[in-house]
Length: 273
Image 1: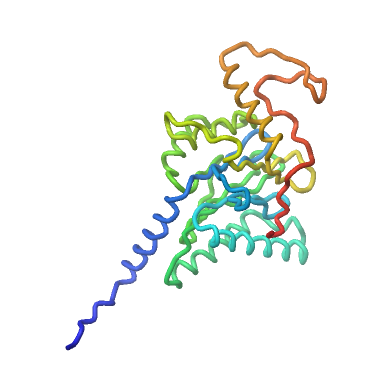
Image 2 (image 1 turned 60 degrees about the vertical axis):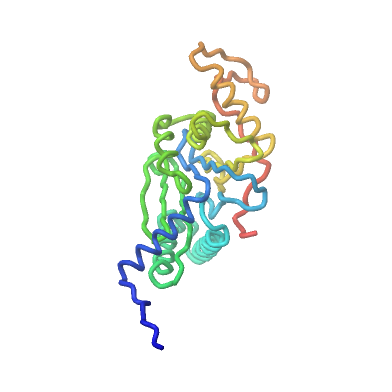
C-alpha cells in the first residue's frame, strides 16, 4: 500500500509558519519597556526571578533587553559581549556601538530564521546612551532579523501594542527618572490592575552622568528609594511644589526628582556570568 507524499510546502508558507510560531512564543512573555529619560535610558521589566535577567549590560555605554525564550536570548547576549570585548580590545572602545551590535544581531537572527528548522522565539532591544539626549540610540530587533530604529521608547514582548499605547499617553521628552519609571510601570500594568512590587520588577538605567560604565542595575534600597519618589510624585501631583533640604546633600530638592544614585551596589558586570 502506497502512502501519498504530502510533505511539500511553499517557501512562502514555511516563512509564514515560522513567523507565526515565533510571534506566539514571544507574546506569551511579559512586555519590557525601554525609554529615554532626562539623564539617559531606562529599562523596566516585570521579572520575579532573581537569577534570570531580561536586562543586562553589553559594554560601557550599551544595554540589552530581551523577551522570549531565555536560553535563546542569553546566547545572543553572550555573543554580543564577546563581539564588544574583542573589537574594543583589538581596535578602540569607541568603535563598539549600539548600531554595530544591532547589525550583528540582525544578521544572526536573519540567518537562523531562514536556514534553521525552528526560528528563535526572541525580540531584543539594544540601547546606547550618548553624550546628549539627541545622541541616544534605541534599536529593536525582531526574530527574523528586522531592525527598527526607535525614537524615544520601545516596547517588546507580551501585549506590546497595548503597552506601547499606554506608554505613549504618558511619555514626553526629558522626564525625570521617577516620572519615567512611573510612566513605564503604568504602561506595564493592565487597566484596573495593581502594579507589581519592587521584588517582582527588574529596573536598570544607562546614566550618561556616570563615569566610564554607564549601566546601573537598580535593586534593593536604591530601587525602594526611587519607588518612594514615584509615590511622592503621584501624591504631590497638582499641589504646589515645596522645597525641602535633602538628607544626603543638604541642598534643596524638588519633590518628584530622583534621589542621588549612589556609586556602589549591584552593577551588572556584562561578563556573561
